Amino acid sequence: MALRMFSKRLLPRQSSVARARCLSHFSRYVKDPKSVSVIGVPLNHGQPIRGVEEGPAVIRDAGLFQKLKLDGWDVKDRGDLTFPVIECSDDEVAANMKFARMVGRANQELYKEVAKHSQNNELCLSLGGDHSLGIGSIAGVLSHRPDTGVIWVDAHADLNTPKTSLSGNIHGMSVSFLMGLDNTKQVPGFEWLQSVPDLNPNSVVYIGLRDLDAGEKRFIRSLGIKAFTMMDVDRLGIGQVMERAVDHLCLRRQRPIHLSFDIDSVDPAFAPSTGTRVQGGLSYREAYYIAESIAETGLLGSLDMVEVNPSLSPEGVKTTVDMAVGLICSALGNRIL
Image (cartoon, rainbow, N blue to C red):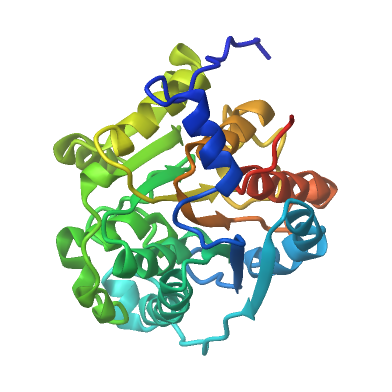
């Protein structure tokens, strides 16, 4: 693997004193003493591969809470959400939105939970489960902080609608539902989204894209969404990518950041136990740099870690889970020095 030169600067307009102040308090959007609400979301119906519902349990069991407590966090485990299994109807299959009512109901429960704890200025950490949970977690944050900016780290844009999707799997439509593209907020099961502020395309930055459908490419271009593909990471280096991503969201004003991290953004060499593996992803250090950079901003208000599937690549489960735990801890302020 070729070595890359990483920029040592994150926010050139922010003084070292300001950075130190942000780090000492971690985030202005989290109450002091810093408190994190951990919400397990064992949701697997947004995609076809079972096993991803075990993600919350294996991440907890890998010592996540102990590590966060060592970093000074008051950890509040809210347990796993429960939701009824609603079978996929013929109408849903015909409309190319598999298990819409099931996934919509689960996301509504997550939305209510995240909204409640965000209003108490706790950092909400949603453990997946598949990436369709990003609908409920981000909707919950937007209901309290409508100016939230989203950094979506993923091999995929998850920007399809039922009209553009090749599979009908809702984990590939999460961002479009939040934006209300193609009337997605009227999809049965997701009507509750109509009371949630739309996610503005200018409030999203993609990092790590390398597998896009034609419809997603059209949306990214037509809506002007800021997107950094793996080619951009190669050309610019992850340091410059993170500077530009944070500047795009926060240059003119301070705002909370939601980090939605799909473990499949990382190259399968470092995170093989996930459902939609694509070669050529983020390296070990690039993934950590993203998390560490977000912590340095002092703006993180909420976080998703999704698509860890321990039923896949059994020999790589520990590597993948350790990566997920380490990235969470780094995003929440764990530092090398």
